[in-house]
Image (cartoon, rainbow, N blue to C red; front, side):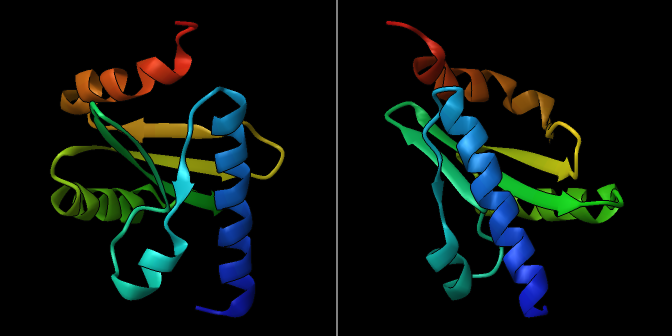
Length: 117
């Protein structure tokens, strides 16, 4: 992967992390873990209830087939986490895709971040 591609990916990860933060959701980047082990999520939200593993893609052209394969791989890697794919095209709002059977887990993990108490 070229340096410009890595830089673009890093920018998108930071951008999505900032969007999540603005919603009150804490998500940490896993960049140092990625270099040690392929297949790690780009961002991770954790609390006592569980984890949400976020895979972030910055794109102009959608590559859903490839991304969904990566999400399936991550589902195996993060067995106890909800796995979400977030993609962001320039000048468009970010979108996400996840597994419906993981929705209850996703809600349990994210609800404390979104509640006022």
